[in-house]
Image 1 (cartoon, rainbow, N blue to C red):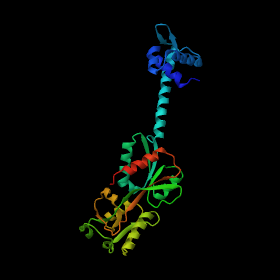
Image 2: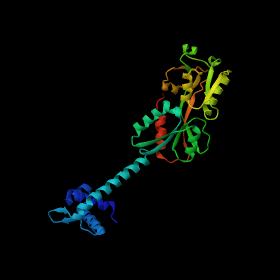
Image 3: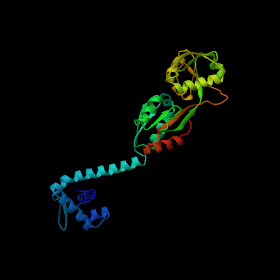
Image 4: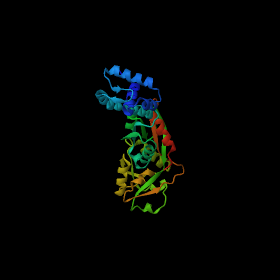
Length: 296
């Protein structure tokens, strides 16, 4: 079987139709160049070149073989380049899970930073709740996950990607809209659209803990899972809600947001998690890009 060195020598001579120019192009002398061509011809059992003291020209077999040799060389060069790019974390496929709420603001900023820094990387994005993301991560079906805390599995590593304040979402006609900021006690007499304790456990525990600290118990009229669904009910004047600040990006008509003043900050956190045994070079790049991102 021929090798790449023989193909490169043949292609150079076939393109230059001159042994001297081909040797100079390959940074070698003419004798070893001639030997490589001869070995290739013996391997193929055909004559590729007709040589005289004054000229070199391709035989019919040589003309047929040249485009195939060039194609093989291009494929080899492309494979080498791609492999090196993947090893350096500059190419490949990054499978990233994310929660729906992270797509309001943080995920678009992260994707923009990734595409700007790593234009040759293909992103495979999957929207899932935190529980499903953890399962997919442990099974190796995604490389990294944007999830809500806590991440406690011993096979996973996690860093905080984002901490954003909670804000109060109000129907446009609610009297509390007249205030510049609200305290938890201001919600004592309001109907509250809250989070489901199982499907949205993180936000459920966060909000309930905050209300318990303020020693208030608003009337809970609905418990939902997705923030955009909660805001739809706020828009219908069914009640008020506590949501992460990124929800303001949805800009729903009929919904007004006000800052929530707390004696001790209780931000909503977003976590980037990945498998402890992961060896994907793109992960290191993702973490570096995440750490370099400016705050919202």
